[in-house]
Image 1 (cartoon, rainbow, N blue to C red):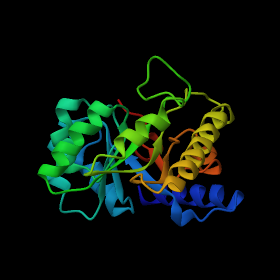
Image 2: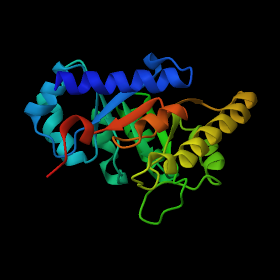
Image 3: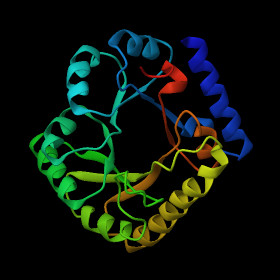
Image 4: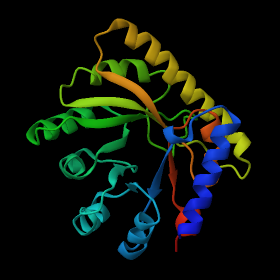
Length: 231
């Protein structure tokens, strides 16, 4: 696995170099859905620093067994409001906030934990009915509203574009998220009252992460390229 992860990091470096970016500003989120503890440990030993889980129940089983490892935990799946308590207990960054109701519950739970919970806002750029996320048009108002919650901080945006065999076809969606982030950062930062940072773009997976990096991704969610096809 060390060779596999080293090769992925090499590909990230090349993609970053191709567009004048610092590869140190791009992090791999190892998507560990269905992956055994043993294989996750091997990934950590091979240089993985961020674990990305998609289901709260799976995370609750894995987290106690792996929490002694020096890794960051990110939640990258759809999050139900009634699981907010568990998410706040385990995750450093939640990628998939797409409603004020969910944000409000995360804020309540973070306050109980005396924690400032870092979140990303999930945007459904392609407006696919099968995917979660708010529309691009709704993002500014939701972000302004969430920014008033004292125990949350918005770190950026996340998207999942349609799946294409040709990564170039996903490029417009990655570019659209970056441009939305830039517009939000400019307009909200200038107001000086909103609790946001907008530095992170979570986009790109095993089949298209290089294209995502060329369009500004800072967090690439990679599972299959590390662990192989899931059964």
